Length: 95
Image (tube, rainbow, N blue to C red; front, side, top):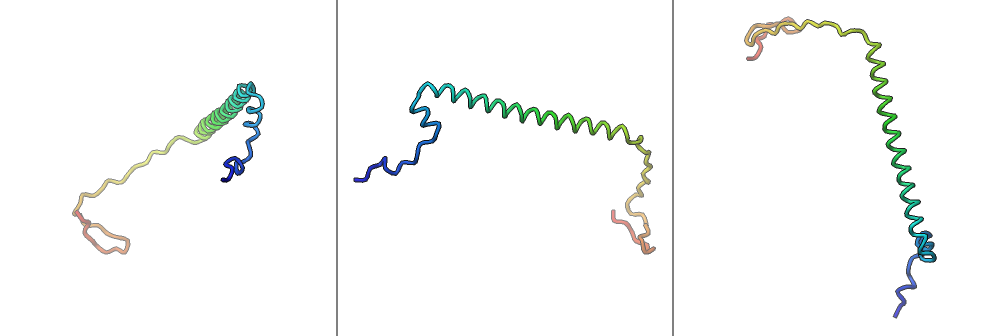
């Protein structure tokens, strides 16, 4: 009968340390948690800086723009009136 432990993959380094010294589990867990906290803080900080930059840039662009122009829209013709197309042909607009 083959030995089930013979084909076992090699132990990971952290598992090996924990197996040799069970007190290291708490310290490794704390180091891992602190690392994740630093990564999360870095992501949040970069996100805040990007948002601040976009808002600031939008304000600067808006300040440099002139006031909006007034636009007069043409009055629409009622449906069924005769209209001229680009070629000058008289066509009736659909209702």
